Length: 432
Image (tube, rainbow, N blue to C red):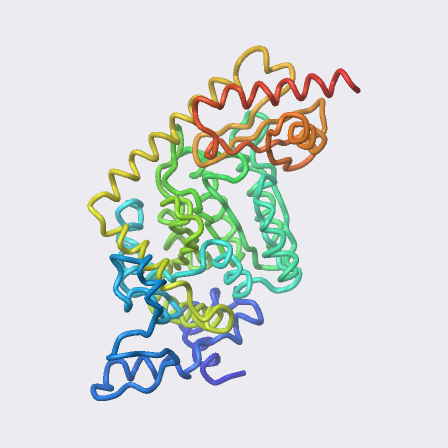
């Protein structure tokens, strides 16, 4: 094993051996090399005469670029666009995102967290964490209603076992009992990766105060029983909390809860700021120990350097300027109000009496989505029928659950959308 990796491992072991035990075999081998980038970083500070280190081309100390490209980027200096961004991201952007986290998550203000690390959006962030913490056959506990790409990231790529619990109990509350049972089953192995996504994709649900309290109590009980836990919080739709839910990430409440629990927040501007194609996400670690935070950052940078090297500089510049803009908060509020009105209208529509003969809906109070539960018609058959006959696109999650993204349907069109779904179900029943 490389000496740098051994040094990082020793720092983690000394500060918190439970975190070291959570690392995958790959995670233990990872380190950030003292190569071209570290030498270039040193030269950028000390090379006052000539800096002949980094692999970009310059003219008069400014990045070389095509005029016809830069004409489309008026308002940005060449230095904000063309050079490589650091592997962990632009320092100023990382600082601004941390300020945002502290502002929007009051529970974090007394907690110890690292500086957010920039990723190429959330999928990349989750993939990094899979590499760092998941060995073959490790258990990943998550709700039965989950984003399908988790299987690719944690099971297919890393060989982890996805173990689910019913997200909702028979009273349509978050199934804390089922979550606790699956977590405590991991006592023999002594390790669990817990993956929670609120607002949830596909259901659009975020727990209320009582439910999140139950989840945290179960985590603490498991930790006190000797189970080391990586808690990954996929906060892709953070901030879109419309009613009857917590209004901050569980990250702040779990940070510092127990030495056996490593909370990690994965979030980004992609969905929060409606800039999906810019691909700017973040990983933030929480730990009492500065040594652990620094070592995990170095290992994370090692993965980034060995895969994509760094994320888009231009995208980071755009997001940074947005966060610092005087218009940011007001535009965010206006978009929130628009999304909230759509969610409220959807709830009115799907709860109409005539629809109850063909569907029920899972609880939803946040995010981009809601889910219909359709018992009498196979949802994959329904999805294809709606697409072919009426030009209506939906997502079949399984045989009974149909996901509707109200985020991409104007409020005035929502009633017609659900009416077509209803018609499609009735027609398929008549044909059966």
